Length: 121
Image (tube, rainbow, N blue to C red; front, top):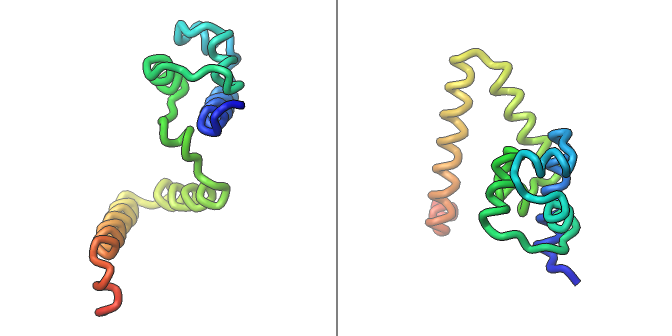
């Protein structure tokens, strides 16, 4: 029985390939990885080498993390909402939004590293 990570990897690569509208044959031409090898990876029958995996990910324009740790539907909607706010804003609104998100991120990381801080405030 294939390892769950290989199943997730194969499924993610197949979805990324299809989102780009590529056949296994065309991806094979782009990467030099055989169609049979790509099919084996997508079906969780083959554990690819790092070099093969990196080549496929680069050609598909996706990250390792996005394949093995895909966002949930809710997370995707929230990310899209933030992206839409950013993309439809003026240059000044984009600067404010980005600065706000960065400040919140720093504050959250600081809270995580100092658990007692939350209780003191």
